[in-house]
Length: 341
Ligand SMILES: [Zn+2]
Ligand SMILES: [Zn+2]
Image (spheres, rainbow, N blue to C red):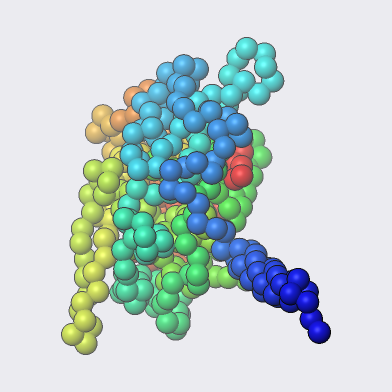
């Protein structure tokens, strides 16, 4: 006959094994989806940051002060920090550093439903928003969200050379963060990691033209229209009515060539797409755009002039004036580094 204590042990072991089974299942889930991190930024340990969770602009070159200060003010929901690093401890700063949790200030379908910035989105909208790309790329899919991916906090550090310069040998951008927008969100290039095609992924973009990859790292491959709007740039509400259903989206007016939107990790700034009449900050005409999609002239933030990129208008198998990729395939300067912890 079974004693009371044996019976209790069996119950205990059964509960334990069910618990272990549940734990192991949720661990598998976690490989695809990281646990929801706190919105306070607490999971980014200050000890592992370069800026220590605060801004220190003391050693930022004066020409960069106006531009880099924007990182500290644009996103009031999720802070972005700017500082410098003296890598070789010789008393002189070596890198300009931008640190963020890679979370936008704007709404997205990809936020957790509990986040105040969550907003529903009809992905079919992208068929009309990217109609020219759809035709040019021969897209025949059904637009939907990027699987279960959501926006999760990242601890991201971008180091840019203190004196950015043209590289004698140009290096390629990768399928990961190549720069940071002024709201602290990652810029990706115009390619998706193989075997995916960016012309398919385009249709998974949210209403602000971004999407997260499988670790929750939200990013822009194209002109960040909601950030452009939030920076005071010129955008239009566009829409298309098909079979009685109206699809609405935010569109860049193409007149934001003078609007700073962020930096690539080689230390050169990125400005909005160039329209027909792109002038410098003194209203003078500008040199033509080079193969890295940049050129040098005075800007509002760099009054003595700087090399800078412009978000580029793409050609995908034909004329395409509705998709503005962030940049070309190569850095103009020598890239610093990006770490995601
Ligand atoms: Zn992507
Ligand atoms: Zn320009």
